[in-house]
Image (cartoon, rainbow, N blue to C red; front, side, top):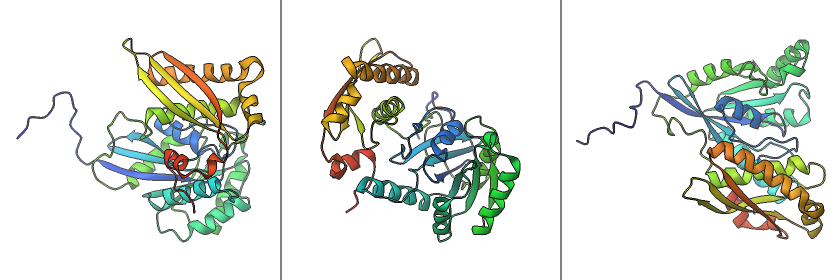
Length: 309
């Protein structure tokens, strides 16, 4: 019988582990909440809707429970193939979870989008909770009305009121989820905050900076791929990424006058990546036109999406 590795801490007994799917309309605050619950950045956040494309899993430890939060793309009426893939992925993430948490922006309230999501949720047998987000900017009377209205449309096991941005109320939902996930061994190493490979996280960070800089000017169809990642002897990383756009006019927007825009995007991405990997980063960005990339099955595989026929 092999001896236990002295460098690996034994897993405690009575452990629990499970998946919690966060679903909702675009910009409900799902990515902000995942980052808050995990305690570090695992999902990108921008003011642009439909930023999250594939499923991102953030891992939070709470007592003896390992909670795997599934940040799904926002659910909205799909118009294009990429939209359909994102919405299908969101519903797939919900069906595979141990608990579903519907996140509603308390400022927006229950609009037609939220009602349609709830109507469809009725057919899924998984335990469901309601999370009203952005309580820091919504009136208490409105919150109570929202909770009542939502529970009239469908019955939730629990209703929580939180601010994903400030963290208010998030400990309560961690306690709840820790009691609801099934008993069993942890699914990921204790110190691993996400299942996202660093190459993909790096591409997502650059995509976030791209959208932050060019919020109005660039369509969200743009994408970023990490082409090379070399770890140097001094511990620093040399990263090459390509920003893909669909037209030459978009390429000019990303580059900016005398390359100033892409320089600013690169600097912002480099600084954040250096913090994440705790080492210097040398980031090289290229911009290429790839027409109709949203119809290429290979691009979908790289994002972890099913290619809709």
